[in-house]
Figure (cartoon, rainbow, N blue to C red):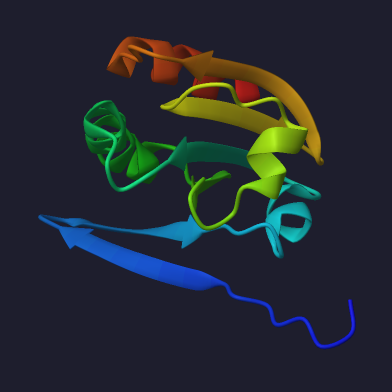
Length: 122
């Protein structure tokens, strides 16, 4: 797209004995993020309290799944991708392998739900 800019932010989290990366995904870099590997994308918005709970689970799990790229997309600033994927509510977490959706979770998402999907993905 002429004149379009690409935003790709990598946040590095460090805790006791662990370091991992979480990608901020936008409408512009979505295709690159999900292409060619295992990826998990959480759709969120700053006002979503339930999303914060899901992200706490994801923060704990990310280090255990190094083969999976973890990402978040703010539906307020990147509305096209969620609309195209028919994300009707948040929190929604979608799992991808080589650019194709392999599963999704929505609503009250537990740590066990996420682990089961991630285990299937890898």
